[in-house]
Length: 86
Image (cartoon, rainbow, N blue to C red; front, side, top):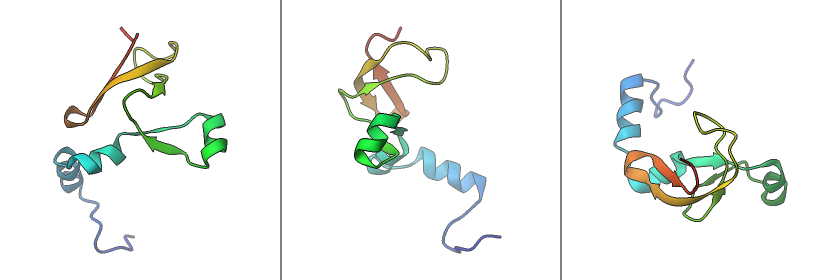
């Protein structure tokens, strides 16, 4: 049962809002989870990705490789570019 009448659960409306989201909303959508050490230090689970952050790929073809540096955050395409990940 839905409790909040102002939030929709319609799939097409949610997809529309996701793909037409402005940059300041995409920033929150493109957040990534922190490591256990950083989680303890900052008391936060997720943080938005910034340029020059050090990240590790944990999903997809390039998972498990060493830590790389974020070269570019391309919010329009929901993509980040990581140094040394080929």
